[in-house]
Image (cartoon, rainbow, N blue to C red; front, side, top):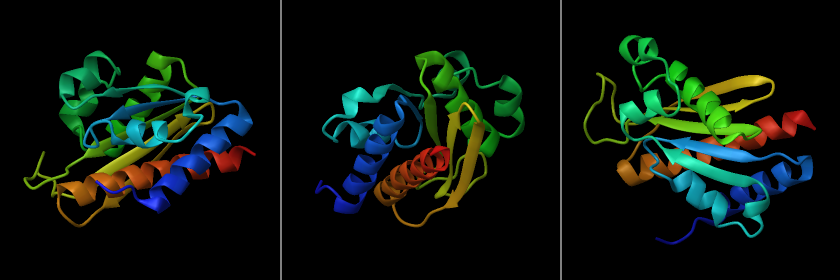
Length: 164
């Protein structure tokens, strides 16, 4: 897979912003399966800010490890804004980081929880609370996963820029 220069630049900007502010980052990934962490760690110097990640592909990992409440799973579902928020807050707590990010959604091709492929939620949790963004993406699994990685990095970039 050829690296996307725009994605590399975005990841570098996130690492730089976190480093300048002395903040640490942790990731909780479902549909992206670790690509957010991989993208961050491709940046030289990422070890100064990136603590680690949890690939919570299975619902039980979201609940048992990240602390996503069962009522969210049974009510809103794992493909939801409340789940994304809980995942981001959970990874922040579990890894003891300043900023937690999460991805959850449907990469496709099949529907999940009645939701179409491309239905995605990304979230960021920090000392000010959580921010979540709903996405409706087009394309195959690879395209949805890549766009999700870009979207969550853009969201964390916006969030840390607002701290300055």
